[in-house]
Image: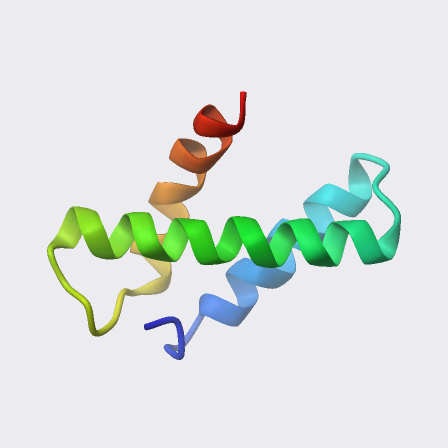
Length: 70
């Protein structure tokens, strides 16, 4: 579902953002992958699809994941 143009850029942005907040490289990568996957599942659920989501859909779901983590 996440093998679409731009989704890797979203993942990289999440990881870099976490690194910028002080997480070590490994922790940022692990957390970034988890956030990315959760965002993908949320986006697919919102859209009612099980096949694929676009990078923009993924981006719009990231805040939902962070709110659930609080």
